[in-house]
Length: 314
Image 1 (tube, helix red, strand yellow):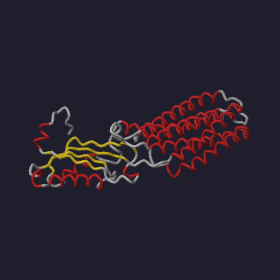
Image 2: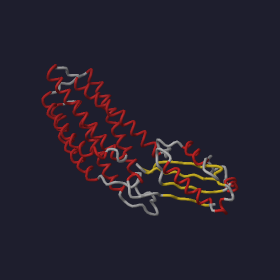
Image 3: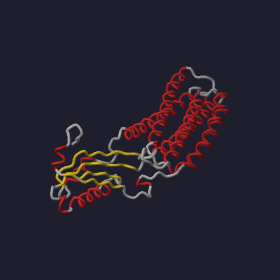
């Protein structure tokens, strides 16, 4: 019986190495914290639901960005014998937590917005407009800082989503202020709150689903294990594939493991090593998701048949 373990290149983000985005996160966090203070004052002065909701959203953003900062620092710590992946998965946990916070804010905004449609409070339009513009300008700066790295990993994606949603919320506040000032339609504030909720909830749910699938170790999106199995079975000397598993450790770091059954003579004529190399190349090159970190156990039918049913997974 032989085992093969392939890491592939380790000097690129595609190979699973974390990139350092801490400076960008610090800048975005500082901007968002300033927005929280400014809008909190504004919501007290105006009594606006839209601004209060946007303030709560900004506070969630600041908390989320702080979580992202902590995660970004932990991700840079090297792996060791106890933590073999280091803290790579912390980015997924952080993104899930940020999505959960966003969902709470979105649900609150929806409930309170519906209530205020029927009981609209008086909201000073000018003050609301001023605070809305201040929030929008600050969020645009934060978006500019994070935009180039928004697809780098789950952590940065969640951070960008937080700031983007807050910017859209500021737009809602501004629109509500203009409508109230020009038409006297007081429910515009509640409508803006519902608009913010409609932006937050679907994106939060989508991010939660994606991060939960990683935490549950589901097969990476875009990788069809039936197709992988079929490719491996077409290789010369391979007679069976079982215990085929694939998961994602962190962004850009998919992994795959399998037991590959080969003909008995492969262990005496040198073909076992060749089959191992072919299987590793197969999963690294033939599919939409390139898996560079792979572990394969090469075995014959006798070894396969001796494995207890309780641990074998066809």
